[in-house]
Image 1: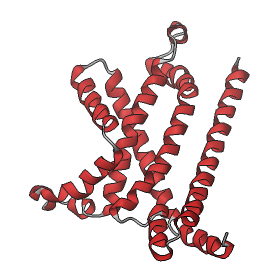
Image 2: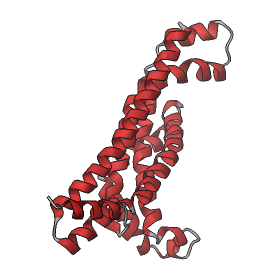
Image 3: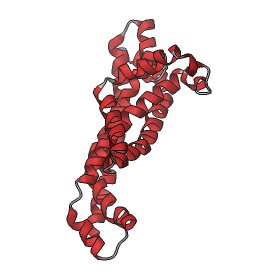
Image 4: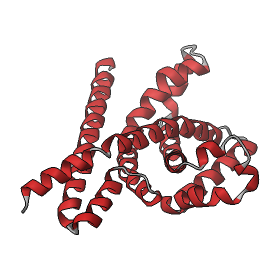
Length: 229
């Protein structure tokens, strides 16, 4: 094992880490808010809101993220009206296309996680809160959301980890994040094993830290719930 090469490889891969974190962080943040919107539409009970959200979720969950990324990056340029709009300044850039694909994809999955968490809350606590005179907003804030978060947090943590790993697909559209730099190093050195060992170790470390943060947050929420009881 060439440790000098591994150290140099690791140092060069670190240059792509900020882009990986930006793609994962911004897509998860934007996707989180969009997921709540989709969740609210699904739970509204109105077909005019439920059906568009349902179709959105089915499309983005039912097709591969790589296909979505290709459509956004290679397909948008085929529409003349889009090329003439203000959005083309962003959509012709690989970074924004990758960010859009990641955001919409995680929003579809996260909306189902959030919806499942909300629906998992039993009727008893909600009825008890209503009997105490709480408003609908107060019931959501103090009863439904705290209970729902405890149910959905592990699954949502898995979704965040999946998005971190999914950023590797951005290398397909020329973005030089960790995997993109790894591919360049392999073309220069013809040593894929060492390069991918370094890249895998980097993703593993990053996802381990995320896992620990989610576990600490889950533990704190459980302690707070026990303290209230």
